Length: 387
Ligand SMILES: Cc1cc2nc3c(=O)[nH]c(=O)nc-3n(C[C@H](O)[C@H](O)[C@H](O)COP(=O)(O)O)c2cc1C
Image 1 (cartoon, rainbow, N blue to C red):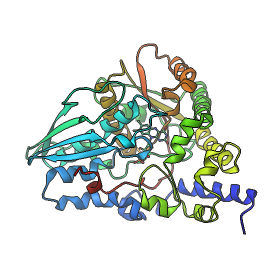
Image 2 (cartoon, rainbow, N blue to C red):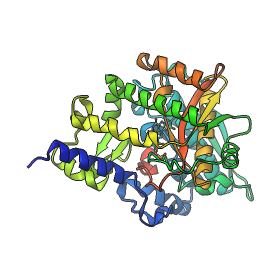
Image 3 (cartoon, protein in one colour):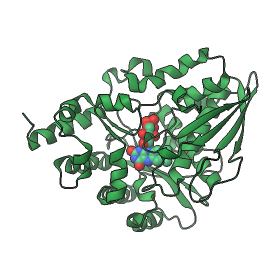
């Protein structure tokens, strides 16, 4: 018997809420969590210490970097005994919402920074040459994003942020509106970025209210722009089996959603159709977390070059790790920063709202205190190796 629409809405709501709910016991250790097949990479990273190859030991952590829609576009080639190249799996781009691969490049910046940190922890310095065969133009191409050389450096200082690598999350839950992050904590948070980075934050009631409204309108605009929305729907993994088969993209695998997947209620076709209850619920479910946002953080670069995008990625990773250490949650709100005609007005508006007349906002995020959430799925590191 199929489920009534009302039943679906209640169950879907509970299911998605459950996906965002605190873990039993409130622990953050990945070993304490139910990792499931799709999330095994988080527990596998420390185990990779057994690997005789320092590049693979570092790679096991680097694949845990934040990246757009969790598509994990990195392709690794091991060269000679101490080098690797990192290039882009061109099939894992998001041309409708990221037409210039700006966000993708930010994701590579985060990946490279985490790789560097993991290697340092292991006593290796990584010499990095970005875009060694030339910087791509409008879009990334098959040329490497980075060439890396690992150099043993016994006793090398580790990065204190690395200790948060396994508990870092993108936290899409509701944040506690009664706990506004205080100025001293926010200052500590911002100090994690590479010196010279331009990090903005606000807890001001008027500005946070304006930003809540803004990011909600941007989310809605994206959902109602067919090509942009379909691009996300195509990478939604609905149900546990789909997430295990493809541990990437947008995972909808809360146990409560399983009956909806089994009954054919929660499908990509339903999600794609603005008239369906599934789509309506998808929109409605975003409203709660956005309203429960006591602070925002953003990252600005003077220009929008590939080098600046890579650096923004490194800064984003560092901020996300520092937030974890400070008990703060972050959730990027990238819709408004995207470059397609339907979003043009909002992209200009957000720069005006934040008083940024020179420079490019590379990341904008919800900031606050949130519940503990589970790690996102990952492909095992070995699957990202070329050849
Ligand atoms: C450049 C960039 C943009 C992102 N934009 C969004 C976003 O708009 N909404 C969102 O929920 N997550 C966003 N994320 C977070 C990714 O979805 C997240 O990193 C990925 O799903 C993996 O999850 P994890 O960070 O918990 O490991 C973004 C991440 C990056 C690096």
